[in-house]
Image (cartoon, rainbow, N blue to C red; front, side, top):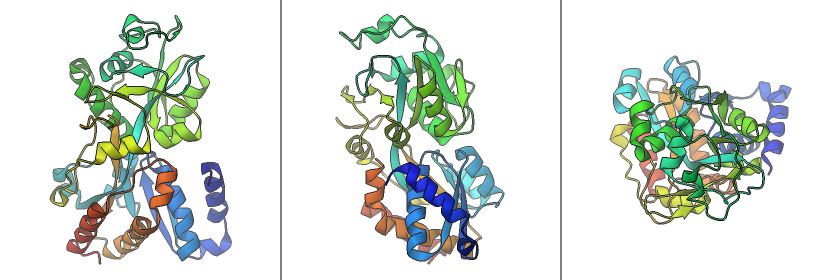
Length: 335
């Protein structure tokens, strides 16, 4: 099902008088998983009559809202550290795995033609590589006709887990980026223009010639955007795909005692996409009745949503991790 169809259907459901009388779960946060959460919510309502109202406001907003208990669950692509979970009386578990991809709008380029390294990407976002025909880019793309045009950098303007994943990757690849900018859901960008949400960045890149930005892969695919190949930790240039995201997650070691705190960037493996990440769900530990409703939704998604996730180029959690999460729920009084 097309994302636009899903979103329109959700709008119709949202204004249905019959729906207003039913049960509703309210969540907010990361834009990264919005396409798959929306599809799951649509199918969950058709199956159970329970509506999941998810606001795509960015990971920073999702963490703030669950800390303030203004939503039933928050969502963040940047995992919350164990000490912060304890201070906020929060539970945390992963729900889906995907990838962040650089996207460009350069005349004559099609998806997967342009190759970049993490170092070159960092230099572009630092403003040190200013033109597309810079020798450092041309050296990676022999035979590709690149324009003598200024690069316009597009980044997130809101607090974003996608940004946290992206900047964590740049810091892993570039000492200059690590020292000058660092990592986080919000950073002081050296150059560029800001767009709100994955949607905002995608729209800017589509409109602005000679631009580059970063979005979750489902947005790039749905919008037919021109994504780049990246050199991974094994030294191979790889395309973003279901398989390359799956390869990046294959060696992950999840620990429920830390609230599953884990980053997947720059993962080893010949086929691994280097900017992979999980999206996490946050719950108020004391809200047992509400948490049961939230967990019912994600348990349904774990059992019935894998095929939908794959169609949208997300990686479902492996069965071993799903079993671990179910034990984590039970251990914390959600059963």
